[in-house]
Amino acid sequence: MIHIDVESGLVREARQAPSPNCDERPVDCRPELIVVHGISLPPGEFGGDGIDRLFMNSIDARDHPFYCEIADLRVSSHLLIRRDGELVQYVSLNRRAWHAGDSCYGTRNACNDFSVGIELEGTDDVPYTTRQYEVLGAAVNALRAAYCSLRQAPVVGHCDVSPGRKTDPGPSFDWSRLSAQLAARGSAE
Image: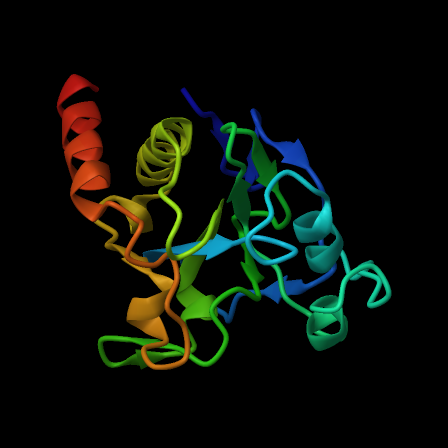
């Protein structure tokens, strides 16, 4: 089970790694969407500290050729779920993380304003782990329980809010598995 302190927006079970890449949500704007992403740094490699360093603005372009392309990015996410299920929090759920970029959902632009971003350590073409699905399901259920605005919130991919620009979490992400897990947990609670 995952516990969220609504006042602080912090997840008790998460390792805290505060990112400076965030700001306040617009006035009267609450989270109403959950966006699932996929990330690995360097690309296709798992378990290193590249994601932490990217979100904390400490990535060194000399450490890997790909880092030259991203060293100046200022991005973040609310949460990351590592391959082993470790949960990392970069931004309070009450603040705006910079995860979706140029995006829209339905008729609304700027998804960062009204969404929670959850990164999964992975790639478009490598299956995510059972533990990641378990933690993601628990996180979504905890978000829906903690925030009234997220009770019926859709869970979508980065590819859905930034089509043509982003492909993650990719074809390796099993949406039906997540849906079944959320339905099973929802009926058990």
